Length: 324
Image (cartoon, rainbow, N blue to C red; front, side, top):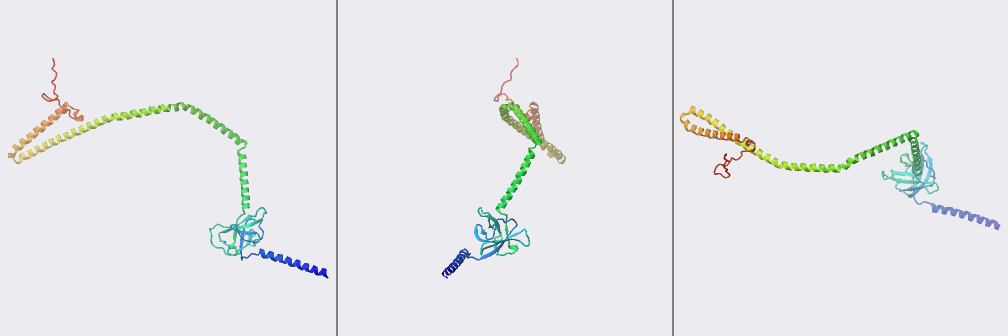
């Protein structure tokens, strides 16, 4: 009896101890926050993601994965139900991506917010409120690696086509043409070398020519001044001729007046006729003198009237040489 009582006591103690351990584990592992539910929608593979996998919002743990299943309406979609802390700042701009946990091969859910749509997303399982899951980082790397391999393979095929035997012959011919062209350029450079050496002397001659032209321009300055003076003399002479012509015009008008006055009043003709005749005689003498000067000095029309020779008793007078 005693052995049996000991066995019963030991069994009860074991059961109570196991229940206490279970209750303690549940107590320490319990979560003291309210849960809200969101649904993630993925068109890509979710390899390595299991229920109870952690969920992190910008690296901060906020919950865990509750379930993973296919969408009944669209088998191409995978629905991931997550439980997160109530009040977590999940907006309509939040997106999800799978991340790897160390080297175990398991994955967790990363939630990121780009801030473009800051409106708060209320907890819901409806289709319009689902959070899209982007391709995992390792999947992107794998796809990039495949694309790189494809491009490398394409480049290798192009190189193989480029380095084919006909193309090699063409390349050798092109290199020969380039070499011949290089030789011709070298010969042309050697032919131009003497001309290049003479360039400094040509430049010196050009500078001397420019200096001579400058000196010639300076020499033309006095000639231009003389021409300007001659033009001024011509202008003065033309003004004198104009005055003489105006005097003759006045004489003609006076003659007409005399003719009219003669017909009107004969008694007043004599005094006015004497004055007019004297003026006519004076103008005639001036005109004769001018014509004589032009006859003696025709160049005076361009260069002006030359001074007359001094007469006896005037300064600078010299007696003419007498012939023997």
